Length: 631
Ligand code: WTA
Image (cartoon, rainbow, N blue to C red; front, side):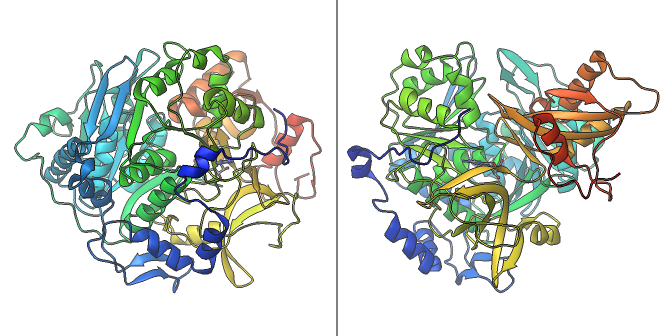
């Protein structure tokens, strides 16, 4: 991969400039900084509130900020209910295509019916406002119905990505102490049925809190259902109680909407908590402005709803904006590498938002696959999850976007809820840079002492203000939230993102990557701690370390170092077994690329593994400061 060049600039075309929702950046940005609360109040005014807020931003207990406090709003009132009284009622809300070619469509009215039925079903199972429901599903419409049904009745959803496995699911259920789990018999991938229910069954054995499991039928797997605990959704929906009318709960702006677990610096995943009000304002505003959303748009965010990208930009932002969303369950190159381009052509997709890994993966099949299709409906393209390398950027721009679609490279995190650094369609683009801060955000690159570094130098990315989409806390761990993310510099609370970045002479931000023990593998966020603990749960392993090393397709690949228990010896067979073990415990996405058997690991005197040293050694680089290394 070549390194980015900050003088390569792509200017927007006259057509893009002509139809831009936001025709000018600088003046609006200045306004959003000097009058942050006014800017966000203007955006909040575009939503439907049961009761307006008393204060836009309450900073009295910083860094525990409150947005739109005193207001009453339910995100579902905005994502569905308010569309039912206008022209959106019969507009397509969701187009879903399954891998085997099956298609299902839902209008906003149809979506409402499904969500009401699901919400009534949850109520009949004793789910109340404030209860946490865990959802573990493939990419099918019912996953979206389940999320919205929870939100509608004021319950909190905790979605666990369907590609995760037993231990990942069990630990998340356990942390949330969910009483209800919503899952499916299975999903489809490359023509094969993926069994989810038996993973769910195994997870339920490891954690005692689940009393009710609602299962959606999605394929033909013969699954084990435990009487009095497990119920088929279609059976429940047939009961009179599951009527298609359900009042939307009047939640407060600061009431929790969901928890999403994400990997952090150490230990177990953190349940990032987001709320109804600020999150609705932030996701809809960022989506509308950065992607120039028009009423007729067909929007395809090809992520999984199980990650933050899916929460914010498959489900909530686009539905609040009344867009038509595309959802596809299956592999991008199944049965052939033109599957995605076929979908773009068939449904007339206007905006495609995906990850650099997916772009690189499709790019390797060559230009002839996309060139077989009419992709002229595309107006904008987006990228997220990891830095995009300029080759992939240019290919996306030329071959997919026919040189006319701006590439909206969005930098953000599970914690931020929505885009923090991204261009608008009118922004001159530099391949590999997410460009400038989104409105309301002041972003600096600082050194270890918190002083701003000169242009072109690498440092830590910090955000010097609160924003409505920010996570409010780590579930059950306020202290950890405050300690991990926030610190005061010059009397201003600053959010530390955990990424290193540079700012160039033009103020463009170039994100380099994580500085902590978080790995981005194919755009998926994993923690070294989770991978290491999965390895150590194998009976022959004593100790393990995981690092990420550069990989052409995946961005990073997982490399692991293992110390075996006394008397055990490493072998190719054991290496394969350990890879399989991690895949079974955590999920396929966490499977190590390599397992090296070692006698010792570099550690600090206090016993912390120095992954930085392992990485430098693997890359043949300077090992840096070794003064804290144990003798
Ligand atoms: C990385 C995903 C460069 C970054 C939305 C961040 C990016 C982490 C970009 C969060 C981008 C995300 N350019 N890096 N456009 N977008 N990242 O929580 O390291 O799964 O800290 O949220 O992804 O990952 P998460």
